[in-house]
Length: 275
Image (cartoon, rainbow, N blue to C red):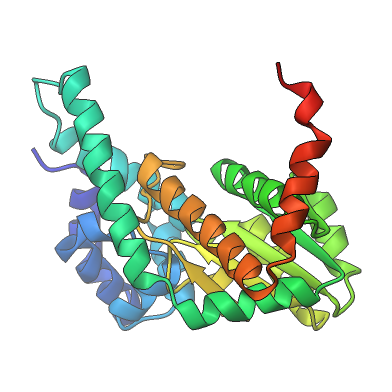
């Protein structure tokens, strides 16, 4: 049985403008792939524009691209539902296999030269601001922890309003690291825009090579395994981000080995907290 959304797109496409029809045709032909695309990627592959993608979504009754993808994901998941759910053992094995793939792909995607440049930028910064929302906040907090262990002044901000105000008042000697798997999170992109407008170096840690966040970033640390609206914070995408965090830490200590001593100092400072 066809999903109501796909049927609606098929029936509405002939009455849409040429730009919107190109988006509709692409969605119909590549509906599964669209779940993993940012608005920028969809616009490019449909030979259209981000504005046209937004109009396409609104013409179908959605407030935005993410809402559209959520319903599309739900309907495609329903179509592919199996009457025999995997056993717990199968689920664990599946997680292990997808994690291996994500790590291998991230290793291939990660530009070592960019990694070294970002490490140098962080070492030169007077302060490092890190921001991510929802599941991306977990990566942001982990990065804050790892950089603090190195003795760098890093802060992960969880409040979007506070992050926006910090970006609006940042000086060029501050570095902002923006974490967003989709690269399209409105609050995160807004922080990047403000920081970039202040002449601040902005670094994106994302699973999307083309997105609004990437467009506003000076450097991109690209992780594998993009998420769908139904898999936000999924293990493969998260573990690939954490790999990049540790790779960045390794690049910093390789550039400045004295930070290895700082790790010992920070570890010693909390050694009496463990039994």
